[in-house]
Length: 85
Image (cartoon, rainbow, N blue to C red; front, top):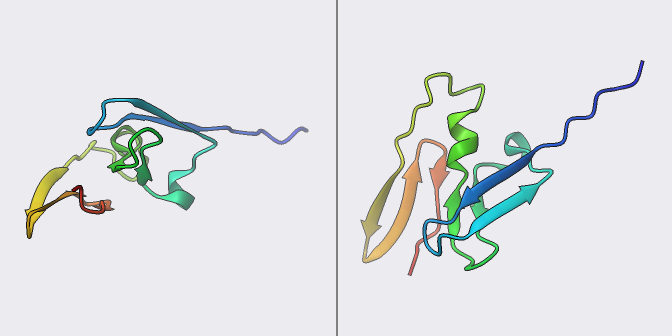
């Protein structure tokens, strides 16, 4: 029997520049939920991947922005993005 090959991709719009980003062959288990926008370079969360993750059956989302020392961070239970200047 042939082994089944699963190819996944993550797609997310950047909250800073509003451009769509496609990350082919992306595995959140290995690569995490924080990525860099291919258009503006800002760090962003893969929120759609999180909402549909097996370890998030209730589609929990606690994302919020925090300002610390004048810098903006994206924060959720999956991690914290680098500050946005």
